[in-house]
View 1 (tube, rainbow, N blue to C red):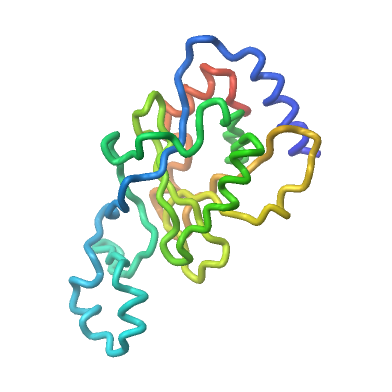
View 2 (cartoon, rainbow, N blue to C red):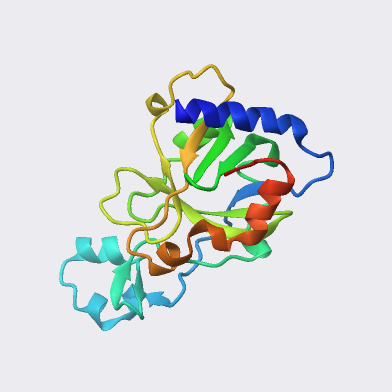
Length: 208
């Protein structure tokens, strides 16, 4: 029932959207970006000590967190506008609302299907960036639910189509999760992304 109410409130709010407003979009990247406070794991002595080729292949694209001193497959990263693909993966019109308290995004049905069909790498996910007027505001991952490792940053799960039965609306909800074992995410959460929240509020797409 709560999800239905969120859908109703958000869809009604869209009727109040201003003609000139900040554009919120989600982009995939031209190439995978390095993590904050990390170095390529294959450059470390620990990687060179691995004896089995199969294990080396699994870890060759991982990075080593120099603060926590551990291997990370999907960690915090920063992006610039030049890192974005030329066209958004999710357009402004397909982003219907954001529930700040529940960390839920309401997206159009066609975008939900696009996410379900993404099939990101099981260990590394697919990096994305949420932008306001093409300026990066929040980075994260589209995450494979079959992954055996943890994502250490923001992520959206790529669920199966069956997880989104017909609800009578042309939109549905996904959760923007906080990464596991990430102190920076746990300490600040989404509230620190003030410009992004302001853009949702200015376009009447913020649900609190």
